[in-house]
Image (cartoon, rainbow, N blue to C red; front, top):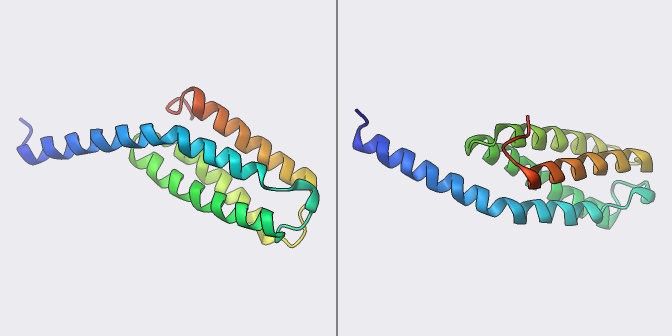
Length: 123
């Protein structure tokens, strides 16, 4: 028989899961908006707009990866972590080919679209 502390824990976890799921659409919209601020043609990963957007994207993907896994969206979190790692690699270089940015942005767009359809279905 579950103890009162267990019941409280699971009730709180369910509440936090709902809160996470409720905020997810806005988070995905922000990711999409930031993605559009990356200028693939600039070639310079340190360019002002691209660098600021990339830093915020990296922070958001990092947070999303941890939170998603915690709140039962394991696949969503795993994909966010992969995108974050690829972004970290891109921003390490002084020059990034436009094709590399476009590929990464395409992967992010696919991730966002899948998460908007059914965030728990990502594997």
